[in-house]
Length: 409
Image (tube, rainbow, N blue to C red; front, top):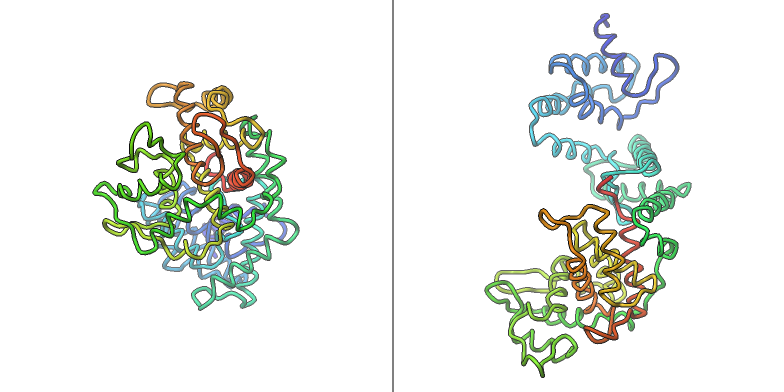
C-alpha cells in the first residue's frame, strides 16, 4: 500500500474511533454506515478522493483478513457515493433500503419503535441491538432474504432488549424526558410509569358500544354521501341510540354527520386507525377490526385518541393529564391551566397566539372525541365526569405518548 493510500486508510479508521494505537473493533454495521453515509456526506473532498479513501480502506481491511472488506469496492458503495455527491433525493431512501437488506439495521418491533431523536440510553441500546444482530448473522442464525428472516430478526431484537433491562432503561429515559416537558404532565408521571389497570371485556364493550355498533354496521359496508360523510339515516339511528348526542326536542332530527360531533369524531378515529376503510361511496370494516377483543379495541382507541404532534393533540394530552390528576370535566377551568402552557410552548394560530377561547374550543373537541369511547359521561354542558374505564383509557393513551419515540428535540 502506497503512502497516500495508507494516509487515506488511517483517516478512515479515525472515523471508527481508532487513535493510532491499540486494537479496534470494527463491525460490518459500522463499515456500512461509514461507506454509505458518513464518507459521502461528512468527508469534505471531491468524489474521486472519496472513492480513493474507500478503496484504500478496503485494501487495508483485506490485508487484515476482515471478511467484509469487499464492501469498500462493492457496486452499492459506488452508487451511494454518487447519489450523495449530486444531492440526489433518492439517496436517503437508497440508504434505508440497503441497511434494511443487510439485516443489521435494528428494526421497529411491537415492543419498541426507535425514535428519530434518541437519548443517550436509547442510542446505546440501539447500538447493542445492532451488535446482537451482527453476531446472529455471523453465526448463521440470520440469513437476510430467506423465509422467516423477519420473524427470527425480531426474536433476536426481543432477546437483546430484554437483556440487562435495556427496554426498561429506554422507557425510563423517555418517561423522564416526557415528564420534564410540562409541569402538568409531572402530576401523573409516577402513575403512568406502570401500565394501566386491566379493563375486562364486558366493561370495555359497554364503554365502546358506539364504536362496536359502527364497526358492526360497516361489516357489509355503509353508504356515504357525496362528501364522504355517513348517511342521514345512519346519523339519525345513532342519535336514537345515544340521545345525549343531540337535543331532538329542541332542534328536531339531525340532517348530517357534521352536526353530531361524537359520531363525526368516532368515524374519523376508526378511519385513522384503519378499522374502517373507504371504498368508493362506501365505508367497510377491515379484517383487523373483527380480530380485536373489546379490551384490545379500547387500548388501541385510547392510544390513537392522544396520538399526534398537532395543536389539538397537544391540548388533548394536557386535558387527559389534568383529568387523570383529578381535575373536574369543566372546560373553562381546564382552559385556565392549559392556556399558559400552550403560550409558553410557542403555539400560533396563523400570525397570532391562540386565545384562551381557542384553547377552550380545542378542549371541547378533545372531550367530544373522548365521549363516544365512554371516557367521559354525563350531559354535554354540565355534570360530566371521567368514568373508571375512562381513567384506564387516558392512562393507556398518556403512557403510549410518554414511552413513544421522540421526533423532536
